[in-house]
Structure formats: C-alpha cells, structure tokens
Image 1 (cartoon, helix red, strand yellow):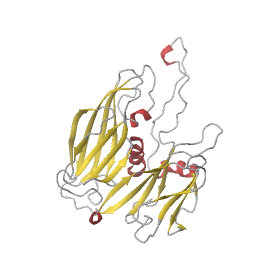
Image 2 (cartoon, rainbow, N blue to C red):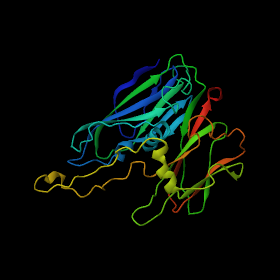
Image 3 (cartoon, rainbow, N blue to C red):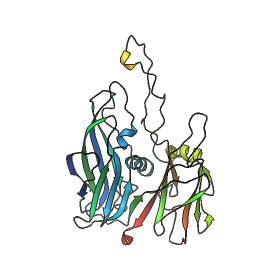
Length: 321
C-alpha cells in the first residue's frame, strides 16, 4: 500500500529565494515537484531548457546532510536515466500566456514504489526539501510550486538512493580525475559537460572516460562520448519530444508560423549528459562495490576547458545513513 499526498499545495515561486519544507515521516518512495507558469513568448515554442533552469538547486537534507543535491536539468536527467521517469508537460502549445506545467521527480529508490529501496522513516523536521530558484526566469511569467509525496507506510527498506553533485572546470585539455564516494555501492554515474560537437567542430568537454579503482582501470577501461551518449536511451528511457519540429507553411496562410528559426529536429534536452551504468540489470550483479576501495575516481579526457558535473548514484544501506 502507498499514500500519495500533497506537501506543498500551491506556493508562489519567488526568483532568487530558497524556501524549505518539512517532509513526511513515513518511508518515502519519491517526491513530485510540479512547476506551473504562463509562457511569455508569442506564437513560438519556448526553449524547453528554460523550465529546468528555473531550479538552480534542489536539495533533500537529512539533519543537514545531502541526500539529493542537483540543479533542475540534472534532476530531469536523473529521473529519465536512473528511474525511467518521463514527465508529460501540460500545454506546450507555443501560445503566449498559455498556462503550462511540468513535473520533476526526486527519487529515493531506482524502482519507484519499492518497499525495499526507499527512504526510511524519520522524525518530523529531520528530512527537509529545499528549492533554490534562479535569480530570473526566461520566457516564463510568474510561477507556482506544487510538491507531492509518495509514502510507503509500514515499509522496512534495506537501502535508499543518494544522488549529490560534484563539479569541476579544468584549466586545459589534460586528463583529470574526479573522486567518487567510497563506502556505498554505486549503481550509475550521471555526467554533464558544457561543450558537445556543433557543426563540423567535434569539441567535447567529456571526450572519453575511464573508471579507476585502487589505481587500476575498472569495468570501464575506456569509453567515448558518442557511444556513452547514444547508449543512454537504449538502457533507460526512450528520448522524449523535448525539442520542437516545424511544418513549413506559406506565409500568406499562416504568417504567425512562418518561422525558420527552430532546429529541425531539435537536440534532446539531455544532449550534454552521459550515463555510465554499472547495475544495468538492477539485480546487483554488476553494481560497483566501493567497500574494498582505497581510492576510486572517474578519469575524464576533455577537448576543451569547460565545466563538468558528476552525479554518482549511491545505493546506501539504511544502517549506514
């Protein structure tokens, strides 16, 4: 049995603010953060990423320690790639002042509604959701937040999902290592790089990766950006229609749609993300164990000095919380 309830009914979003909310005390499968807003763009499809950019950071904190910490775009990516969750937004009609909404997933287990993998019960006020809104919004008027929670009363979880972000900007194009957490098993790693190929320029912030454990290559001895990126949809969720497409019409018939601007078809919104999966079958056979590691990192080869984000998806034993 599960209980789906409202945590935040309808709260006005204020740019630049960081409100916090106490979360329910029963075991938690996931949270659903829905943003409602009006499109501020006439007769065109707004840039979808502008919805995700409203969220500078989403954090779930247990006694001040991070369980979830990432921005809106990475939250969308982790929902798709780790949990197969694809939100269907409302009213993407390309109309000015059209009331729209979109839902982001904050998961505490890779399989939603699982009584085995969810966040354990806690006392009131120990588990907190904090949203940090961008200082300004683009192509968006106003905004309202709804938060809903799915609890699993009576569940006795063995583990839960922890996802927090590390960032780095290299100063050159030499390989560099980013440390991965040691102690918990790692199911997947979600990566983001600022630069991807464009036109005939093949520059990639993350051109290739290698996983290294105890100073030796481990499982991923070498993999390239293109293969990792193209593999994402096959392993997890099929790419959603996050971009736009255009039907060519005569200007006389439909002057308001006579637009050659949008890319046809547009890149997926996760064009800059990569998934490095370990527990591919979700049965623990290939999960990355770290309890026997003295050092653990992911080695990244950049083509350009630009920002990188790394989100290890840790599967935490409840007793280790």
